[in-house]
Amino acid sequence: MPLSKLALWSFRRTAGHRYTLRPQIQAGISVVGLEPSCVSVFRDKLINLFPDDEDAKRLAKQSFLLSEFLERKVEHYAPPELRRKAVVHGHCHHKAIMKMTAEQALLPKLGLDFQVLDSGCCGMAGAFGFEKDHYTVSIKAG
Image 1 (cartoon, rainbow, N blue to C red):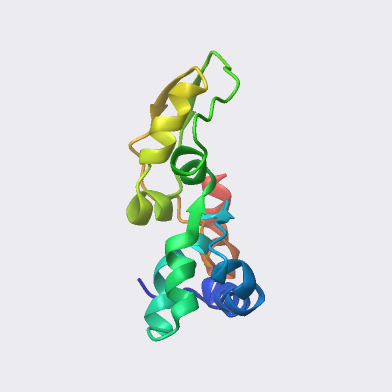
Image 2: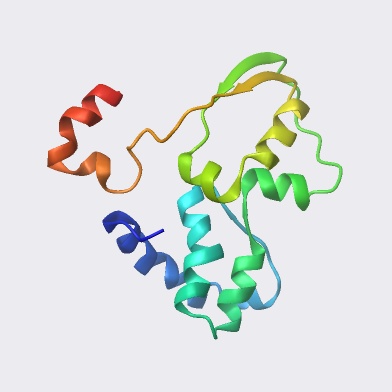
């Protein structure tokens, strides 16, 4: 998937983190991200652009979304139970690249009666929602 204009700006900033985070990366410390597009930069794009960089390879293996980190790295994690209904609209990049398995494992532990929407992309990620030509679509999308 090509880098969008906004993602390219973000990538330039994010790619620099492999140097900022070098001691943590080399120590094997997990990096937890909340934005799927940013985590995918660490997992995919960074190693494609820097295939010989060992820290880029380590970072790809040590990067997690919060849900993934809680499911895979926090032994016996028991969140507070909310006991309510929820509708889940997953981030399109998250669903396409990373899947929603960690969320679908974590949400029942919260006591949620949830439904994951079978929805597509809202078209608002990246630069699309900020471009003048897409203003009408942005307003209609809410």
